[in-house]
Image (cartoon, rainbow, N blue to C red):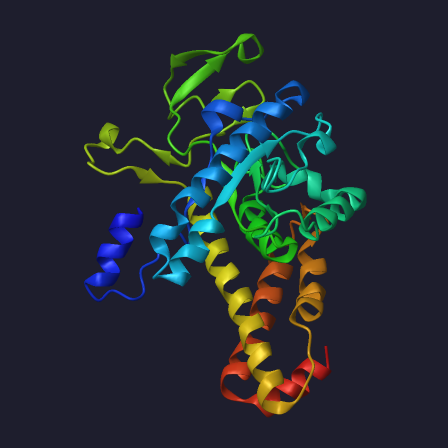
Length: 313
């Protein structure tokens, strides 16, 4: 990656940064580790830290690329039953740098307080970070990609990500067209008729497949699902939330105001979810999104009108 990125820079490409959105996920080694694997997790992380430090000087002439390399995330999925303190560490000892718990964990105020504690931890040059994931769990009333869930949940989940400062999402599979038997005994997988049997796991209809095989209908492409379309629309909403925050910063800089984008957006969030439990009133969601976009339009084209509208919230 270093050689490729240097070659791109030398060819005149000043924008491409292969490390900026890269991450390390050693899921085949330490997926959902238990307490007994804490030292293994730390050792794995220390190897990654040492490896980055060993090659960083190759990018000495490209400080922005070097910074991205050193900030490269190491993501570890973490289940509720573990003792979190065993996995806490720093750049000297290793530990979890990017925590990836279940979505449902963020419902608890005590958990949110611990998250903030880790985000404020100083043992890492590049700080700690949070992703989240769903795999069989959680289920409704928490958001999921399962068929039995309300469709709006997969869309609102993207609003939650922006709100909770979640910087990534692990989802274990989009085209798992098998059936899992005896999951608790190591798993046995058999073929299934995906069109008539949604039961990937005993209690998780649709889990692991967001597309269907197009070959059954003589197509050379997969067939999308309503859930996948909902996720895409949620990602577009996320971009609006990000753009809203940027425009608030621009407004404050140009007009001397001191609006807080997080505080403003929180008034919208509470109308469509509580904690990380989505509300299912689709009309209210449409109203919230419409009001947000109207504000964003004013921020882009009518700053004085935006100030008046923001003061009225």
